[in-house]
Length: 153
Length: 153
DNA sequence: ACAACCTGATTGAGTGTTCAACTATTCCGG
DNA sequence: CCGGAATAGTTGAACACTCAATCAGGTTGT
Image (cartoon, rainbow over all chains, first blue to last red; front, top):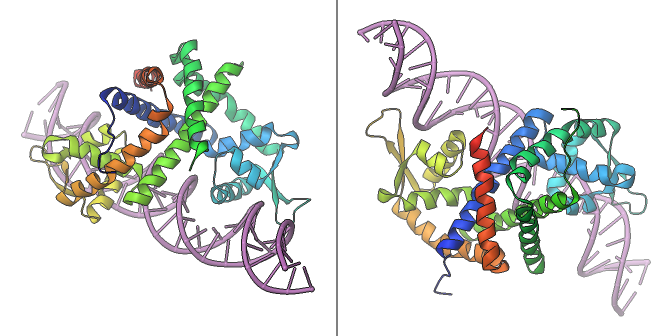
């Protein structure tokens, strides 16, 4: 472990380009959502996942997994979303420890209002800048990284 | 503006793969740095940029631009880094409004200790999972997104 | 039936980020 | 050289995220 495997110039440039793009992009998306819909990107993700579910409801731990969130983070987030009336919490029917988060009517309305602006931003900032080939490459690269992360710790 | 341009299935998959990979990856990098070096990734970036500069010092606004950080964020961050003795602030010679952030000896030592672990993590989580072609593609894609973001607001 | 362990979820403290407001200095047009 | 605008940087409040601790309810083995 004495010699560090530094990045080659090619790898450096790729890593920095990716890092820079992602940092700027996530900032831009967050600002757009915050300005137009009054929520951070993480909250938007929660609403999207709930809206895609039949019954618009999901167990907390399942929702945490789907939104790539820790349980703690989700708990805090759902507490805020509940204060705003966008989500409702109820006891799980089968497991008395469990909670179910459910998207309210109002939450659905808010999401429907937020979605076009956000998707438009993704189109404008990402998709429209890439060729169809690059879109495919991005999927493969993303998948490879996800697989690697899932593989070990 | 009535009809939203939704993403095609291909685009959806690519966007979600990228989003998932990046979210998990950044979390992993942050945790590694926090655990092994006691600092978040943003602080590491600051130290790196300073260390690359002749004199290991830079004007605050220049440093903010290089680290893709707001002035406010950098101010707060430098304040913390100064408390830890890793960075020192002095007045800029030419502009009496200006401040210069300088990496201390101790800061350099800390950075040298942190770098191998972080670079190793980038190698393990990203570079080693991709073919050389994909590394090149990632650079192009990142560059395209950065260019797009720079172009307008 | 009970102890030990595991799982679902929440909580609070600590830390970092954002936004808007503010101070101080410099730049620029007339 | 003066007044208004721009620039450099900081600050505090509000908010989100992390980590570790905690609580309650289930599961397992004997």
